[in-house]
Length: 277
Image 1: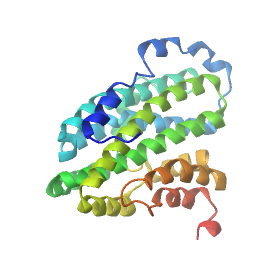
Image 2 (image 1 turned 90 degrees about the vertical axis):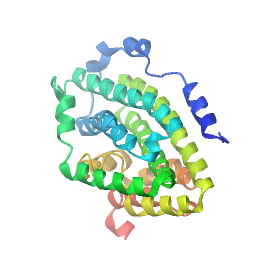
Image 3 (image 1 turned 45 degrees about the vertical axis):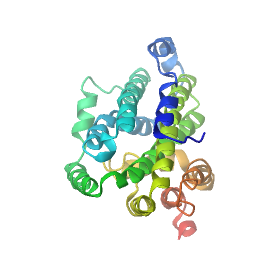
Image 4 (image 1 turned 90 degrees about the horizontal axis):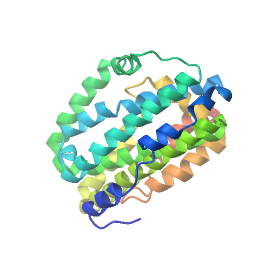
């Protein structure tokens, strides 16, 4: 899909039905969750995913302090985006509980309190710099968001394929439908913003190539992000999956034809050092 204006992108997004509606969630066969085995190696991955989804509130508040977040189209999108992402986290937590991995009543507050001060400090500095640059930073924000949403989407796909748990697959397929809509919004707005300014293109390329890290890294430790990568994308097959479904899509953005930072970052963890050297 190719849109000509920001409003067209928003109009398309708002027409997308909720995959995780209240009806859908109520009809998930929750009683069947403990009837199927869940390999324990996927539990840290699910906890990581759950936490990143509920951290959306943190990301949303950060973005609202920037010109990007004050844009009326992006702001309107983020109102629904925030609700959907938190719902993803709550549903994943319920699955973990029913699978026998009790998280406790205060899991959400505990997860948010675990965000390191270094992340908060770095974000404060970044927000100040973003406000100095102004609207030209929106292309970088949207490109970063597109990469992260595509990464989340593909991570969920890999998880249901590897875990082979029918109830988890049903949940993740619904989450992926919503993540796909988020990725399409971010990617489409990024394309429009980058097309408007050569400076925005150069800035976005610089930011992504120098500072991009896997979704969640920063709010979560790097070793947790690496564990998710090795669990879901290990080996040449996993790296090729990332390249096909994420990097090639990123390369379709203006001035990003040769940017392969996502594939390289995954390969540094998922492939033996002798291969990536």
